[in-house]
Amino acid sequence: MNLVSLKIFIVIFFCLYGLLGMVEPASAHRVNVFAWVEGDTIHVQSKFAGGKRVKAAKIVVLDPQGNELLSGITNEQGEFSFPIPMRTDLKIVLIAGQGHQAEWTIPAAEMKDLPLATDATAAAKAPAQTQKPTQISELSPGIKPESPLPVVSLQELEAAIESVLDRKLKPISKMLVEAQYRGPTVGDILAGIGYILGLVGIAAYVHSRKKKE
Amino acid sequence: MHISEGVLSGPVLISGAALAAAGTAIGLKKLDYDHIAKAGMLAAAFFVASLIHVPIGPSNAHLILNGLVGLLLGWAAFPAILVALALQGAFFQFGGITTLGINTIIMALPAVLCYLGFGRMIFKSPQIAYLAAFACGFLAILTSGIIVGLSLIFTEENFLEVAGLIIAAHIPVMIIEGVVTAICVAFLRKVRPEMLPGYPG
Image (cartoon, rainbow over the protein chains, first blue to last red):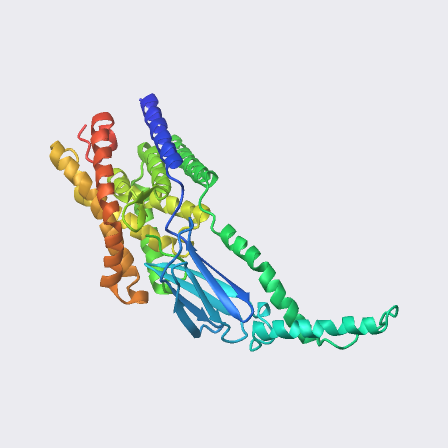
C-alpha cells in the first residue's frame, strides 16, 4: 500500500517537474515599479514579474505626507516620465488594477539642488566655464596656481557633473532595473516543495506522538 | 489573483486574516493522520501550479488548482493553501505578509465551498462525477474572482467592473481547470478511489 502511494507521488512529482521544464517560469502576479532621476525629470518603468510591461496602468506620485502631487498613465513600454514637482521625498505608486500594486521611493537627495535649471542650460554653461582655467594656465605657463581660482562656481560645476553622470549612468540604471525583475527560479520552487515536505514530516511527527500518549 | 500589499485597507485585511485563521483552525482539526501526506502533496501542487502558464488570448493566466485541492482535501484545503501561499510569498514575492489572510480566503473559501457542494457527487455515475469535477474546477476560480472583486470594493469602488474584468480574464483558465479536475477525478476513481471524498468503502 505504501509502495503504491510512493509510486504515485513519484509520478506526480516528475510530471510537475516536466511541466516546469517545458513552461518557462514566469508570472503575471507581481508588478514592479522602478524610478530614477535624470536631470529635472523622473522616469518610471513598470513591469510584471517575468518581463511583461504594464501598459496603461495608473501611476500616482505622493509626497511624504501622502498628498497626491500628480498622476499619469504608463505608455506602451510601461514607462512614464514627469518633471520633478517639488524637491522632497517622492513616493511613486503603480496601480496595475485587480489588486496589483507596487511602489518606489525617490529620496530628495537624489534630486538636484536647482530643480528649475534645465539640462540644456546647465550643459551650455558648463563648457564655457571650464575653458577659463585652461586659458589662465596658458597665460602663465609653468606656474601652477596654488589656490583654486574661483572661476567656476561650485554650483555650476556640480550641475555639469551631475548632468554628465546622469547621462553616463543611464544604461547602468536600466541594467539595475532589468536585474530587479527576477522571476522564480528552479531553486525557489524546489525550496518551497522542500518546506512543504518538511511541514508534512512535522505534522506526522506530532500526530505519532499523540498516538503514543 | 493575488492581492498585493498596500492595496487594501486595514479592516479588510484584518477580517480576511481572522476568517483565514478560523478556516485554518477548522482545517487542522479535520486533518487526521491519514490525510497529512495528501494535504502536503496538494499543497506542493498548488504551490507549483501558479508557475504553469496558459498562454491563451491576450492575457496569459496560470493554473490555480484550488478546485482540485478543495475537492480532495475539504476543510484541510485551508492549511494547505495557507502554507503554499506563504511560501509563494516568501520565494516568488507573490502577494505579501499582510495580505496572506485575504489571499488565503480568496483561494481556499471557494475550494471548501466546492467540496461542500460537489463532494458527494464523486461516487455517483461517471457522467455525474465528471460533470461535478469540471464544475468544481470551473466554479472555484469564478468564486475566487468574485471574492477578489468584493475585497476590492472598498478601494476601487466598482465591484461589477473589477469582478467582471477578473472573471473575463480567467475564463480560459476556468475551462482548463475544469478539464484538469475532471481528468484527475477520473484517474483517481480508477486508481486510488480512497483519496476522493465520500469513498463508500
